[in-house]
Every structure is written in structure tokens, then in C-alpha cells.
Image 1: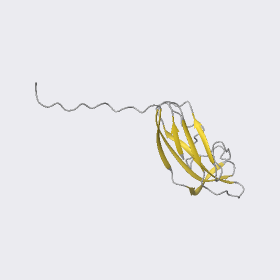
Image 2 (image 1 turned 90 degrees about the vertical axis):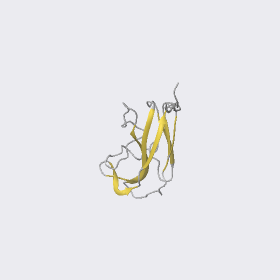
Image 3 (image 1 turned 30 degrees about the vertical axis):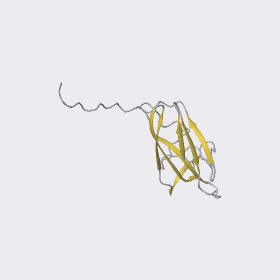
Image 4 (image 1 turned 90 degrees about the horizontal axis):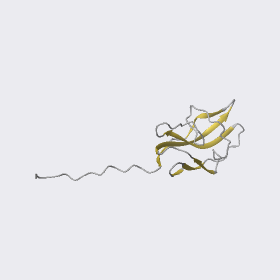
Length: 134
């Protein structure tokens, strides 16, 4: 996964390194989530969906959001408030049985990212110490 940002958006390029799985009812995919953002930001809005294994993705066969095995997608999340965002990505196997669910034991380790939307704040200037007396 690679990330870029500008004054109001984050663009992610996500590559699914898995080989295609030919068993019906399963898909191997990768996804990205915004874990934390500036105050007032809602993490529940796509295209960066929460891939936590305890949450169910909406439709991992949507190739505009989830890259199929061996494929790459580029997606942009726009209209973001300026500030620092914490994101994480992972790959895993999903099964379908009344809804998509992450398969236990079939998840990669999470990869963490930190990225700024908009300009980063500059540190306050420090003044040199004053020695002596006047």
C-alpha cells in the first residue's frame, strides 16, 4: 500500500499479493481503514472501510474498492478535514455465508500508516537562552 495526500484528500494504491482462490464463496483481498482522524471526522464512510476482523465488509467483490488477487486499485477519499490521520491495512480471506466475514486465522498482520491532510503544523520557534544581565 502506498499513500499520498493533499489539502483535502488521501489517495491509496493497494496491491493484493495473493494468488487467485478458485473455491466458490471465498475471496482473498486487501483493504485499508482510517483508524483515527481529526476531531469531527467519521471513520465509517467509504472508500476506506474498516477491515477489522470483527466487522463485516460490505462487498469485497467490489473491484473499485478491493483489489482482486494479483491486482492493484487506486482509490481516493476526498472532502477530508485537515489534520493527521492514522490508517491501517491488511489482507485476508473472506467467506460468504449470509454475509461476508473474515476467515479466522487467515488475516495478515496490520500495517500502520500516519499521514497529514493539509499542511503540517510548524514547530514553535525556540529562542536561544539569554546569558548575563543588563
